[in-house]
Image (cartoon, rainbow, N blue to C red):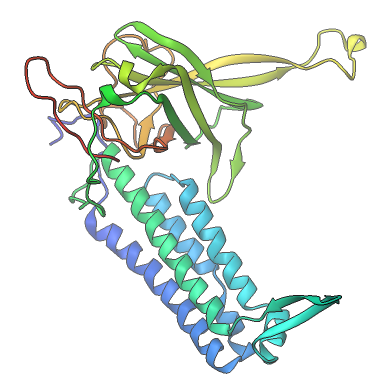
Length: 358
């Protein structure tokens, strides 16, 4: 395997190590659910310390660390929602409110009408915690699936969903190309830029198709790990899906912007905008269609290639070919919205192939 894939990580993620961490997350979530269930039945405030969600967050962080310190936005939202539900469940105000009768309560009256709030039983928040546990599972499943597409592992992952039944040809889709850029992960130590920008461009060979699309400038932030959350839709208004050539690819260029102080200190004005120096930090690329003529779908982790490598030459680099793909920065590309088609390009002289909807 080392001779066939010399650039892959020396020690890929093993099934045993992943199962251990997943079981740890399940045990921690089960502990919280059991404590919430006992609190629902007794209303006992002494159980409140065992309902703390930090241990679940640490277990999820361990899985993100195993996946190369990649924390998707779905994981962030799922963990934060879980913590919020647990904290709401253990507040003294909530325990006092639950000691009163369950049912409608009149807040204020106005003539023949009144503002009424409905008091939900304690089991409602218990069910909410169960719902957030399912969201954490879905977020972890999505991260694992995305990682397995980009890097080598010693196990085969079964897809959690079959392809949709609706079928359509890409040549019949008149919608513009719309791509979601999630976040930039694993920032390099030397990146001290003020903010970052993503530029998207469609290429056919060395020829650009349409015009480039820029994201808004975004500063770095930190949740479990430091990252740059773009969460931006790149809308290629001049290019429809039906116009995409078979060999077309999407290139995402990362720029770092650094604020430059004015040369003349006396010339500073409050209304003057700061000058920004923009530097290309690297690029990522992905083919729109695979060898079966099916359009790329789902989420991807795209390795960031250095700016010295010419992004205009050749097809998009294949997954796992980056020399330092397990430690260098990666861009998480989100799903395409709207129709969610699995498109394909019909071959000439044969019956047009049908493809399924993403």
